Structure formats: C-alpha cells, structure tokens
Image (cartoon, rainbow, N blue to C red; front, side, top):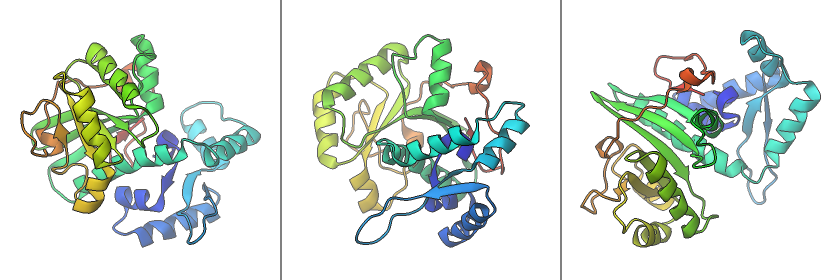
Length: 273
C-alpha cells in the first residue's frame, strides 16, 4: 500500500487493516522501530499532528528485489522523504488517500461490497501516456467499487479550494472530451463552493459529474460510499449513494500497460497501483 500511495496516517492504515486505530498505531510503531517504516510530522501548537508513515530505505530495497528492480540509493531515498515531508501537496495527497481508505472502511463493514481497485495519480498518468492523454486530464485517483452485481468505476478530483472554478471547469471539459460518460467525483471543501460549482459549471448539462463536500461528510457522519453525492444530470437534488451514480462501464486496466500492481495483502483490500 505504501509503495503505491507513498504516505498514510495511522487512521488510514486502521481503515484498511485493523479494527481500531490503537492496534494500527502499535503495529506501525513496531515496524518503525524495526526499520521497515519511517515517520514524520510537523510541529503544531497547540496539540500535535498525527504521524505520517512512509517506507524506509530497507523496505524499498526489499520491494525492489521482489520486483527484480534496482533500488534507489539511500541518499536519494532520504532526499525523497524530506521532500515528501515538506511538500506543499502533502495534505492534498493525504486527503486523496483518506478518500479511498474511507471507501475501504465502508466496504469492510458490509458483505458483498468491496473497493476492488485504487490507483494513484502517478499510475493513471503512466497509462494515459500510452493513450497520449497525459496532458489532457490528470485525476487524483481511480477506483472500482462493487456492490452486489453493480460495478461503478470513477475518477476522483480532490479539491482543497486552491484552484479557481474556471480551472475546475476546464477539467470537466477535458473529461467530457476524452472520457465521455465517465463518472468523475469532485470532493469539494465547502457547501458554498459546491453551490457555485454546480451553478457556474454544470448548468450546461454535462453528465458523469458528482460532488460532495468535506463539511457534509463531517456533519452527516456518512462515508463517501453513502448518500452524499449530488449528481449533475440526475434530475433531482436528492443525494445519491456511490452505487446509484450513472456509470459508463469504463474500466482502467493498469496491468495492460506495464504499470505494476501490488499483490493483495488481504482478500478484502483493493488492487493498488
């Protein structure tokens, strides 16, 4: 999971693998002490920030050996970890990872439901290069969600309010051009931004776009698989569940494009890349 998605918090690891955050924290601490993981956090006052966990250099070496690849040097790895810790996009990446680990947590609680695939921005970019679409759109993630006999595939755009509505509008146009009908989930940071988004950008009747907000998720207690999605072309203001959203049937096959996927560490976990 960390090889594919670089950084996770204890809460996100617990959503994937453990029944409680406490058990996840104990295991992560043990792995850190054994040298398998590294961790970092920013100094905040008052309070403290949750640790962010990433792979150590020995772990990177082990994974490279398993894949018959040449590992990066220790100095290059240390530089990469420092850049990750100081990156201006770290909170965005953690937000995207939290979105998908939240789906995994929702699936673990219900039978016949699972998050089957979770692909990172970089893995999607490699596939799009094969189609010569790398500069057209760059989703933050791709997922495949299964509920009973229904399969929903989607791209994710995780918005923290740093981009203009015009920029979001250009993304919608690009998706409509290159992936017509594909479900694109916009996770917006506030209800006000969502209102402006629908009023200014989705009035043209573009299909496949659905939105939710961080405010709604926090207030309702619902997970991102629940009735929290406002669809652009549903003909109703009722919030829909993830599996109720229109679906194009499009499936991104990472394995077809020489982008390695990790073996599933447990049956309920998604294929990751």
